[in-house]
Image (cartoon, one colour):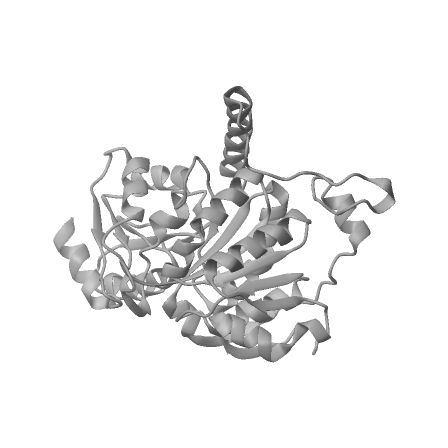
Length: 359
């Protein structure tokens, strides 16, 4: 394969190909709709024969996240993927990794809930991903792709951020992005790191006794309250650094906008079509698309509130991101929410009518 090529594939398939190309050392996962193509594509590509990447279907989501935990302890680039109920089962392991400050990638291709819900697309895992779905005071770095291209691009970005800050990162997609097919430029191949490179780049990792070096002990357990507070304060300081340096977002037609839509993932694609329709009817509206859901672009939303007459939070859920928008706006302008449930995707014309009736 050429280092760079344009091909047609699903978002889930793009995740798998990008993982192979960015030097991923191991994937551990379990099938669940609508993300099963990630594991299926990896099995089809057989990267263990070409790059040495380990691909293993575990017996459950609990097993897979703990395999990721183990691999991350050694400084390896490891990942898993699942969908909403499966990620719920992973929450304990994710919290352990956050507490142990381990880099790893978790891909969540969301389906509707609660419970087993529907296999149709949803964005109802925002709280779970961005508010620390497991126990304890922790955050994941959360990237929200809005295209198949971003599904591919965000794999390497997520690993880069995860290792930069020693923190788990999540690609939070929805079933529509995972299942849709689009043209994508695959990233160039990166070689997997050697053991010597891992030891040099990850001095915290447990890598045995190579060169007489004693193995590190990695744990999230600390029974002394004073020491546990010190650890927590250090982790919280890291989160403040991430908030200061890693906010990512896209602006669309906001220069002259009198109203704004805030949306992520496939909802942002719908918003762009809604904006086109609304502007043809004389309604000046633009889009702010958070690319990082955590850290959330709070300052950008706050700045936006000083320019527009109202903000619409467009989500494929009952209203989750809207809470962060309202906190950022601090009551300066009206904030409304519109979303559809049960796997129903909002129609652009619906969004325009909501805009007309809300402000």
